[in-house]
Image (cartoon, rainbow over all chains, first blue to last red; front, side, top):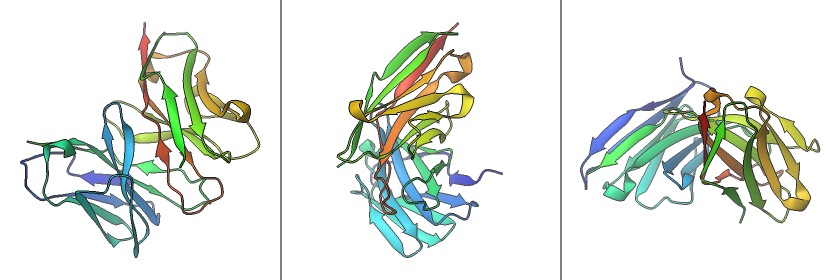
Length: 114
Length: 115
Protein backbone atom coordinates (compact mmCIF):
# COMPACT_ATOMS: atom_id res chain seq x y z
CA UNK A 1 0.00 0.00 0.00
CA UNK A 2 1.13 3.54 -0.78
CA UNK A 3 2.55 5.55 2.11
CA UNK A 4 0.88 8.81 1.01
CA UNK A 5 -2.58 8.59 -0.51
CA UNK A 6 -4.78 11.26 -2.00
CA UNK A 7 -8.48 11.17 -2.70
CA UNK A 8 -9.99 11.71 -5.13
CA UNK A 9 -7.47 11.14 -7.89
CA UNK A 10 -9.54 13.11 -10.38
CA UNK A 11 -12.30 15.62 -9.80
CA UNK A 12 -14.43 17.80 -12.03
CA UNK A 13 -16.42 20.56 -10.38
CA UNK A 14 -18.21 23.76 -11.29
CA UNK A 15 -17.35 27.33 -10.50
CA UNK A 16 -18.55 28.33 -7.05
CA UNK A 17 -18.67 24.84 -5.60
CA UNK A 18 -16.88 23.94 -2.39
CA UNK A 19 -14.66 20.90 -2.64
CA UNK A 20 -12.28 19.05 -0.38
CA UNK A 21 -9.14 17.13 -1.31
CA UNK A 22 -7.91 14.63 1.22
CA UNK A 23 -4.47 13.33 2.07
CA UNK A 24 -3.57 10.45 4.36
CA UNK A 25 -0.17 9.07 5.29
CA UNK A 26 1.09 5.98 7.03
CA UNK A 27 4.70 7.15 7.33
CA UNK A 28 4.21 8.58 10.80
CA UNK A 29 5.58 11.97 9.74
CA UNK A 30 4.71 15.13 11.62
CA UNK A 31 5.05 17.49 8.65
CA UNK A 32 2.58 17.68 5.79
CA UNK A 33 2.30 19.97 2.78
CA UNK A 34 -0.08 20.89 -0.04
CA UNK A 35 1.27 22.00 -3.41
CA UNK A 36 -0.27 22.80 -6.75
CA UNK A 37 1.46 22.10 -10.04
CA UNK A 38 0.77 24.07 -13.18
CA UNK A 39 2.53 23.50 -16.51
CA UNK A 40 5.62 25.66 -16.75
CA UNK A 41 5.32 26.92 -13.18
CA UNK A 42 6.63 23.99 -11.19
CA UNK A 43 5.27 23.28 -7.72
CA UNK A 44 4.02 26.06 -5.52
CA UNK A 45 3.33 25.68 -1.82
CA UNK A 46 -0.25 26.34 -0.70
CA UNK A 47 -0.22 25.41 3.00
CA UNK A 48 1.96 23.41 5.33
CA UNK A 49 1.68 21.94 8.79
CA UNK A 50 4.63 21.07 11.00
CA UNK A 51 2.44 19.28 13.54
CA UNK A 52 -1.24 18.83 14.33
CA UNK A 53 -1.55 22.23 16.02
CA UNK A 54 0.57 24.13 13.51
CA UNK A 55 -0.82 25.46 10.22
CA UNK A 56 1.03 27.91 7.98
CA UNK A 57 0.23 29.70 4.76
CA UNK A 58 2.45 29.08 1.80
CA UNK A 59 3.16 31.10 -1.30
CA UNK A 60 -0.35 30.90 -2.78
CA UNK A 61 -2.90 30.33 -0.01
CA UNK A 62 -5.62 32.72 -1.21
CA UNK A 63 -8.82 30.85 -2.02
CA UNK A 64 -7.75 27.75 -0.09
CA UNK A 65 -8.08 26.49 3.47
CA UNK A 66 -6.76 23.41 5.24
CA UNK A 67 -7.54 21.18 8.17
CA UNK A 68 -5.11 18.90 10.02
CA UNK A 69 -7.50 16.39 11.56
CA UNK A 70 -4.78 14.11 12.91
CA UNK A 71 -1.11 13.44 12.43
CA UNK A 72 -1.98 11.24 9.47
CA UNK A 73 -4.59 13.44 7.75
CA UNK A 74 -4.36 16.82 6.07
CA UNK A 75 -7.23 18.14 3.94
CA UNK A 76 -7.29 20.99 1.45
CA UNK A 77 -10.52 22.86 0.74
CA UNK A 78 -11.46 25.21 -2.05
CA UNK A 79 -14.21 27.34 -0.53
CA UNK A 80 -15.59 28.57 -3.84
CA UNK A 81 -13.81 26.98 -6.76
CA UNK A 82 -12.81 29.10 -9.75
CA UNK A 83 -11.43 28.01 -13.14
CA UNK A 84 -7.88 29.20 -12.44
CA UNK A 85 -7.72 26.67 -9.62
CA UNK A 86 -7.66 23.97 -12.26
CA UNK A 87 -4.37 22.22 -11.56
CA UNK A 88 -2.66 19.09 -10.28
CA UNK A 89 -2.54 19.05 -6.48
CA UNK A 90 0.04 17.16 -4.47
CA UNK A 91 0.27 16.30 -0.82
CA UNK A 92 3.66 15.58 0.71
CA UNK A 93 5.07 14.57 4.09
CA UNK A 94 8.44 14.80 5.81
CA UNK A 95 10.17 14.26 9.10
CA UNK A 96 12.13 17.25 10.49
CA UNK A 97 15.91 16.99 10.06
CA UNK A 98 17.17 20.59 10.14
CA UNK A 99 16.09 21.31 6.60
CA UNK A 100 17.65 18.24 5.05
CA UNK A 101 14.48 16.20 5.06
CA UNK A 102 13.20 14.36 2.05
CA UNK A 103 9.61 15.05 1.14
CA UNK A 104 7.44 12.09 0.15
CA UNK A 105 4.71 12.84 -2.35
CA UNK A 106 1.32 11.38 -2.97
CA UNK A 107 0.16 10.50 -6.50
CA UNK A 108 -1.71 13.75 -6.98
CA UNK A 109 -5.28 14.90 -7.54
CA UNK A 110 -6.15 16.32 -10.93
CA UNK A 111 -8.80 19.02 -10.50
CA UNK A 112 -10.80 20.63 -13.28
CA UNK A 113 -13.00 23.60 -12.47
CA UNK A 114 -15.55 24.41 -15.16
CA UNK B 1 14.23 34.93 -0.39
CA UNK B 2 15.69 31.86 -1.97
CA UNK B 3 15.02 31.01 -5.57
CA UNK B 4 15.94 28.37 -8.09
CA UNK B 5 16.35 28.75 -11.84
CA UNK B 6 16.27 25.79 -14.18
CA UNK B 7 17.55 26.61 -17.64
CA UNK B 8 15.48 25.02 -20.36
CA UNK B 9 11.91 23.89 -19.92
CA UNK B 10 12.61 20.99 -22.28
CA UNK B 11 15.82 19.06 -22.99
CA UNK B 12 16.01 16.44 -25.73
CA UNK B 13 18.70 13.77 -25.91
CA UNK B 14 19.23 10.55 -27.77
CA UNK B 15 19.38 7.26 -25.93
CA UNK B 16 22.98 6.73 -24.78
CA UNK B 17 23.85 10.43 -24.83
CA UNK B 18 24.92 12.55 -21.89
CA UNK B 19 22.15 14.12 -19.85
CA UNK B 20 22.78 17.60 -18.43
CA UNK B 21 20.02 19.49 -16.62
CA UNK B 22 20.95 22.89 -15.25
CA UNK B 23 20.02 24.42 -11.91
CA UNK B 24 21.21 27.68 -10.39
CA UNK B 25 20.21 28.94 -6.97
CA UNK B 26 20.04 32.38 -5.44
CA UNK B 27 20.92 32.50 -1.76
CA UNK B 28 23.34 34.47 0.36
CA UNK B 29 24.28 31.30 2.25
CA UNK B 30 24.77 27.97 0.46
CA UNK B 31 21.49 26.15 0.96
CA UNK B 32 20.49 22.52 0.93
CA UNK B 33 19.75 21.47 -2.66
CA UNK B 34 17.60 18.69 -4.04
CA UNK B 35 16.68 17.10 -7.34
CA UNK B 36 13.28 15.43 -7.63
CA UNK B 37 11.92 13.46 -10.58
CA UNK B 38 8.31 13.11 -11.69
CA UNK B 39 7.47 10.20 -13.99
CA UNK B 40 4.26 10.47 -16.03
CA UNK B 41 1.11 10.35 -13.90
CA UNK B 42 3.07 9.99 -10.68
CA UNK B 43 4.10 12.12 -7.73
CA UNK B 44 7.61 13.39 -7.23
CA UNK B 45 10.39 11.28 -5.78
CA UNK B 46 13.83 12.25 -4.55
CA UNK B 47 16.76 11.66 -6.90
CA UNK B 48 19.51 13.11 -4.73
CA UNK B 49 20.31 15.90 -2.29
CA UNK B 50 23.26 18.04 -1.30
CA UNK B 51 23.55 18.65 2.43
CA UNK B 52 27.24 18.36 3.30
CA UNK B 53 30.81 19.06 2.30
CA UNK B 54 30.80 16.35 -0.36
CA UNK B 55 30.18 18.45 -3.44
CA UNK B 56 29.61 15.54 -5.82
CA UNK B 57 26.42 13.78 -4.89
CA UNK B 58 25.33 10.45 -6.33
CA UNK B 59 21.69 9.58 -6.57
CA UNK B 60 19.44 6.84 -7.84
CA UNK B 61 19.33 5.50 -11.41
CA UNK B 62 22.88 6.62 -12.24
CA UNK B 63 22.30 10.34 -11.76
CA UNK B 64 24.70 12.64 -9.99
CA UNK B 65 25.00 16.36 -9.31
CA UNK B 66 27.86 18.64 -8.41
CA UNK B 67 27.52 21.57 -6.06
CA UNK B 68 29.62 24.53 -7.22
CA UNK B 69 29.51 27.41 -4.79
CA UNK B 70 31.45 29.78 -7.05
CA UNK B 71 28.88 29.29 -9.79
CA UNK B 72 25.85 28.93 -7.45
CA UNK B 73 24.97 25.83 -9.45
CA UNK B 74 23.81 22.27 -8.85
CA UNK B 75 23.58 20.71 -12.30
CA UNK B 76 22.26 17.17 -12.74
CA UNK B 77 24.07 14.74 -15.03
CA UNK B 78 23.91 11.17 -16.23
CA UNK B 79 26.53 9.73 -18.58
CA UNK B 80 24.15 7.69 -20.72
CA UNK B 81 20.44 8.35 -21.09
CA UNK B 82 17.90 5.53 -21.07
CA UNK B 83 14.39 5.70 -22.47
CA UNK B 84 13.13 5.20 -18.92
CA UNK B 85 14.73 8.51 -17.88
CA UNK B 86 12.06 10.45 -19.75
CA UNK B 87 10.37 12.47 -17.03
CA UNK B 88 10.17 15.95 -15.55
CA UNK B 89 12.99 16.97 -13.22
CA UNK B 90 12.74 19.60 -10.51
CA UNK B 91 15.53 21.33 -8.64
CA UNK B 92 14.62 22.58 -5.15
CA UNK B 93 16.28 24.53 -2.38
CA UNK B 94 15.81 25.01 1.34
CA UNK B 95 17.56 27.10 3.94
CA UNK B 96 20.56 25.43 5.53
CA UNK B 97 20.26 24.34 9.15
CA UNK B 98 16.80 25.72 9.63
CA UNK B 99 14.22 23.35 11.02
CA UNK B 100 11.41 25.62 9.90
CA UNK B 101 12.10 26.35 6.28
CA UNK B 102 10.25 24.89 3.30
CA UNK B 103 11.28 23.74 -0.14
CA UNK B 104 11.27 26.18 -3.04
CA UNK B 105 11.03 24.42 -6.40
CA UNK B 106 12.25 25.44 -9.81
CA UNK B 107 9.84 25.40 -12.75
CA UNK B 108 11.02 22.02 -13.94
CA UNK B 109 12.77 20.59 -16.99
CA UNK B 110 11.12 17.95 -19.13
CA UNK B 111 13.65 15.40 -20.37
CA UNK B 112 12.78 13.80 -23.68
CA UNK B 113 14.76 10.72 -24.75
CA UNK B 114 14.62 9.54 -28.34
CA UNK B 115 15.71 6.13 -29.61
